[in-house]
Image (tube, rainbow, N blue to C red; front, side):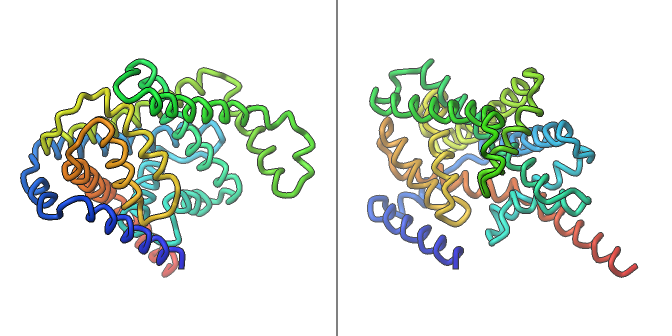
Length: 307
């Protein structure tokens, strides 16, 4: 039922967009895209995914999950494959949790591990957006820039608050809220050494920066003449909106957000929509290695079952 709702939401958003964007113009833009720039974008997006997998492996190692780096890379790409190519009731994060639990780790511990990795990734996104908006203040209207600063700053303050949760001991005895208390304990333990926190946030900023660069390369492939600084400010809010699981693999939400935000500084709606569609297709292609790891894992499990 959830997937049916997501499909409906995705279709409705695209119908709305195509009311204002001529589909023939869109197809003409897509047909003229430059393959070389798209290939560069694919390399950047793949590098971003690999760097994110490296961050997860480092966090997991500190949390006493004893697996080699290849396991985390394979699992991360499997998760991306489920998110982008096989949108189902099993999301990418659930795949990663199941992969860890299949190695004998407790599911709750695996869930905390993946959730913390997600949070650190979000902190990197907010940090990049906040710094970029302040440094390049004036590219967008002041009202929009102040909104981004408020959202990014508020999100980072929320992250700081997570570190204080372990001090609220009363949470330990409240059903449901005790998970937040345990999360606070894990974060406090994980980042006793603040160098680890700085390292992981730095990696997360790098992950997001590579993704922004991928989108910038795609924009060049369809001759969008915008400076890179514009992408540093405009792209992170799009990804923030995509966190809301309302559509199928982010399709529709991403396109609507891209058009809405980039139209503040650029007036060619068809090219903006083409850029978003090309990026969506790029995400699918970059996630395809996950299909290999998924099939390989299923084959290994079947072999073990037979023996």
